[in-house]
Image (tube, rainbow, N blue to C red):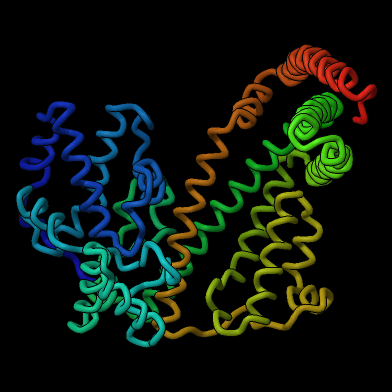
Length: 454
């Protein structure tokens, strides 16, 4: 591992410039910083990530998320703590140099669209189909697409390889001390270094998966209580909405196409009504048994998850569909058991995963094994993207109304019963209005044909 001496003073030159800027200028500099992140952190899809996602990924300090000043401070943290050592490596010593660097023609290593979306363009050196696709892109009649394809082909012709200098030891910095302990700038990453990076990425992913599973179970427990108390009201409301919709359809068909065409409407209504009922049954089944884990159960689940996450080899069986399906089924079984809080099942899988696989009748797989440098690099990139995706998924969960309701209920147990009673009252009013509308439609039909068939 190489270390690099700071040849210019960010603290005395660049950061004070940030502090002197007005809001309009900050927006321009912030855009430049995110473009710089996209370039320096490639192939992490930094350009597609929210600022707060990058903050969490690199364990930067919380600065008042989604506030103007907080976002500006986070951009400064990103520049100073994450991009700085990578910019130093490239000899970018002034703000003008940074701007010139971000303005150079460049496209992300990971293809952003098309049949090979998510693949690294460098893989075209050993994949004829990918190479042909890039050649097709370069010949596109669209100027931007053609320029993009030509750029990729030029990089391949020049022998440009994946830049592995911007790597992150995702298991470091756990004490909350920031990213400085986690960012690793390698001169050349070798097999053992990648093994360490993969291991730390698995640990970080395990923490996030577990955190998401526990918080989702809390949200699901609230949803289960609400659904159990309000199902009959929601079901009746949806039944009336559907009934009104099909009485409208009946009237339209009657007046437009005649009574024979209108006569098909009751059957259509019955079929969709049955589908709606099955949806309610499916939701009830999904929420059945949802409960919160206590502290002891959470600790057991955390320990189990740490053991099971070592099975996470996303691309180990990329070219063996049958074994790939086994991996996917096993992962799904583990995730579902985690979400349901079925600790005993997780313990059984962890004790003897191969026995569990054979009991299910799935193809046997090796759950551990050696990897080449290219396999480890590919695995690490997959894990990094999965971590970013999971950070955003967790943020979406925490922003949901049901999660906020759970938080309120933690402080006051009377909150959920109050919410249930309030929603009941609103639903009863809506149901009364829908019943009146349904009766009006029925009367309109009866006036035309003598009776309402639905």
